Image 1 (cartoon, rainbow, N blue to C red):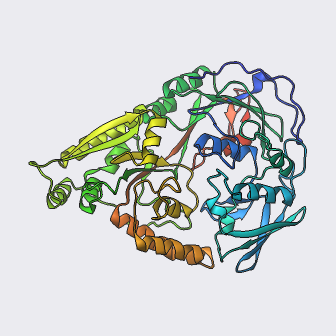
Image 2: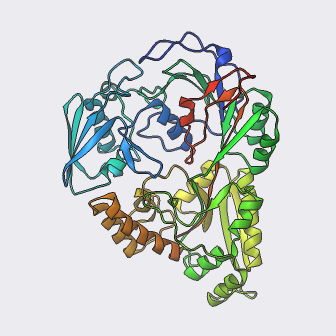
Image 3: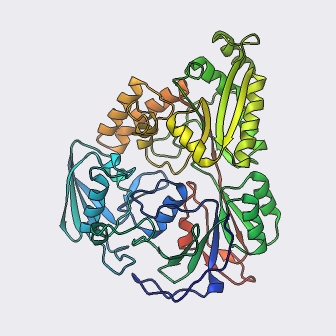
Length: 501
């Protein structure tokens, strides 16, 4: 476990237009539960790395609050059914090594992701590109194999310098981006020291895995700010603590139960419906989450451009659950025994225990297995489970439906870990992909969500709120619904006596 130990700061080099570094006593220390493992945005898959990379690099396209594509580095126009032109603007065009970002860098980045043998998780999103080229330093064009109105949404991709790509630069540990922050140094195996280019403000990312220790360090002033990964009782404790401000926003990360649909028990729709109706989600939100969550009925939240707000919740009805189990051949003389796998995180184990008690009331005997994260997630990816509890983090694109629900997306080529197969859902995914506009894609996406909801390919539980806590000397940080750290681009330290308007 890492603590908030002193950081060796040294003199700040003026790179990529970044200002002179702040004094050590002005460093803002941001505590995180898990360290960023990969600072190459083409390869990163863990949540902390992706959130840090958003600060180190700029993307060709961004997504707005409804996950619609909006200009990032570039604006675009559709020249035909299968042809796009992107023009770079003036903002974000300076890499941290001092070189200027051009369309050639964009092409080199996309080609490195598309290359045969690429290990990038974004490679499939670019499979529809037939050709791309830079017309000049500010303009690039893409030609597609088939019409794809959602192409801009797939280009929320960070841009790396072509020269560094060509020499196989180790971006994993030494990022070169044009984002609002740059890496100064790794102050330990799990900690980073970043510098904001606009004003030289330094921000240390300090890994403190234990939530109680993280809170203690905030209260003692050893760290200044933290976000997420806290059980409700610690959030309540911080909310009562003098000199600490707690802020929460509605979240978009989906907590859910996944099924192994190749298991004859959880492969039964009657059994899945019994499980769904045995769970009292509102009670769990009130008692375990302190009310800091909202019910979920689909992978995408209702405010998403492709989301739905009219899916009827499965009601809590233990008697109906027992009747469904009886119809499936289970009852007092033949009880249904299932195993739930989860992480060894204390809060997740408490949630598993509460689910165990609620399912028991409906006649389901649920055994709980808690594992360290690596073992647990490895088992999920390999299909070694009957039931598992997990959270989808940072889902912004409806491509999640192809990635997680299409019959051709079984691991390792996708994340259809439950082995869900439905020909109608496959057809609707293909129809949405061929839609001439995002508006036209809404209907097939809505239809497939209704099917998945009715068949309970998974049990959506809730979208947990995103919560941040900061000391009185910190201003300007607001948590984001998807848990990103973008607020670090504005956060400032102020005198204790200063008042926030």
